[in-house]
Image 1 (cartoon, rainbow, N blue to C red):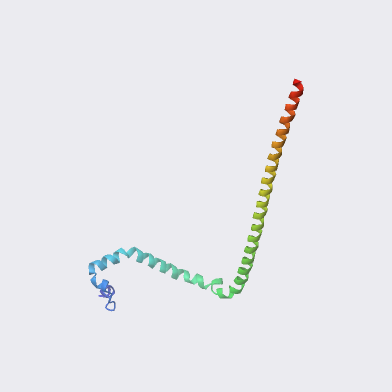
Image 2: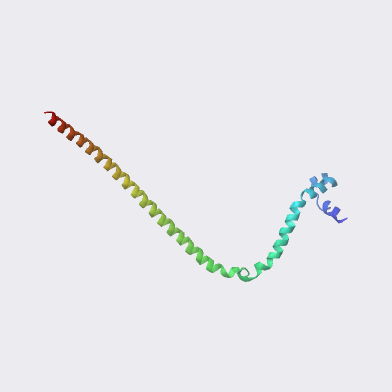
Length: 131
């Protein structure tokens, strides 16, 4: 019968297929049944959606290639500009952070000098008060 011809293809001389019994082949087909049904459903869905691809802008998609090429060039240029601006902003932030760190170190140094000067003044005042 027809299913027997499909299972035992006379033109297929693969040695592994000849070793399988009819029972083993049947089990393989039943094991793949879910996948085959899913494939069948997806094939039907593709056939149902085929008319959608043939109408509207998708039908003449090649005619849009020049416009897409121009847009792609513009997009690449804008991306480069964006990267340049981003690099400049990062440099400005790094410069700002470096300046703030330097100012902080200067202020800490001045604070240390002022604290030492105040200590000396208080020692001098104390020594005057005791004398």
